[in-house]
Length: 298
Length: 298
Image 1 (spheres, helix red, strand yellow):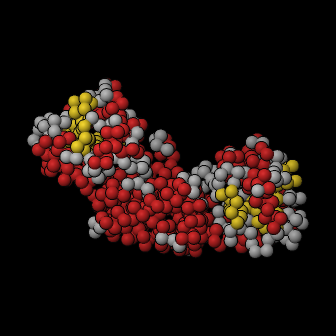
Image 2: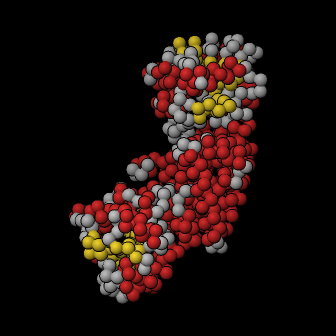
Image 3: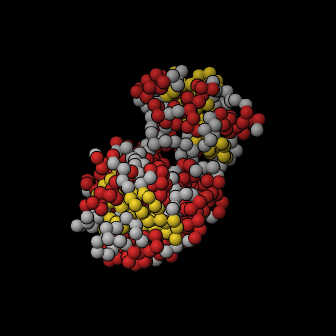
């Protein structure tokens, strides 16, 4: 309990990437005074200018190494495909005792890509705040984004406990609940709860996109009947999601295979008019909804 | 415009079935005094008792013919599989000029099942209020359910225009927007916007249900990352949805086939690491979201 109540404080925090997640985190750090200095690095000057004008950065630079220099905590908030290059770039700038963390939606690949670039004496503490909206970019952030949501931390075996606790404290300060998990297991759970749902949503909205134009307009018109929820999910950041699927390939393909088998069974039941099978499945799925409601995630 | 402003009035309305939709409609009729008498018929005495205690019925009966007798408007609010039996039962009770309508989510099958039982001088005006929640039963209803939503009316060719207009006026009074459509076309549009999304949601939640228990509990815990939205959709009434799929088989199987092809293509792109293909699809789907937002359906 004590760790939940004490407010963490960092000298210098470097955020590499300042999109929805990075800018939301920066807003919490600013709001609650969790750092003396926020250094922000991004790929474009436009993002840096926006971060400055939003008042969520104390210094900005296109060079990630410059931002990471002297930082007590570096948080990579960029697409997974950029991690290896960022790791290479900042490796020499990380001071002894520095913590390198991130916010990526897959975690085994993060350890694979960043691990080799963490110098002796620095600590790699990967994290995944399970939060987001369909909007992207620094303007889309808001400090309440993480409130009441989970943040999963996946430290490699043997990671310094103090470093883990500091990262946990930061995320507790955002209002998140903390879960420590093995990276591989995290990726399996997220393949089911997040990656497959997004893949399905992208597919179904894509299928609708290919309809002849008149039918497509009617699909939009009557989208409140179910389709709408999928369009929201399928409006998420394309770069982020491309990287998720490329970097959690095995777990996604495994759960997708199960999904395909189940869908084929349902398709067959519809074709052959097997009402009892349909009814049974449609009843069974209500239990999970009750679980979601009981877990206060509804 | 005049028809949108004049409040419709019926002598006797009979509601056959008093679940989420029927009870919501009854609440509007009561609230706005749109009928002198609401006669309710249901399959169980329990539903009838509930309707009485909720104050949304003036008379209740287990016999649909008794409710339909002398009614100016009969609205079937029951699962599609019950329509044929209800049609047979009430056929002899429908008075000359009576309007027979319904609220079913498929429309060709409704005309197929009810058409033969509509006596000379009565009018069949099928309707589909495109509204709902994941809750069912008479207690789940509320009068604002239809407000700002579409109601699609699918009259067979040659239907009496006055009868169509009366049904349209009733739904306008609930706050709905009216669309007149051919039944077959309605079923095709709904296969995409509503039936396929529900089928997919039922499948993915079913896939998760079959996971080993420990993983399933974690899926529930982290459901806010995408899965949650599917559990809500997959908690809808099993009987209603069984009947939808059995009665819109062709259109659902047709769009499901397209979906399957698209999903297979995505699966292949993931397996072979084709990031550009993934990025292109994930970008394309954002346009439909913008369409949904522009159509004020978001």
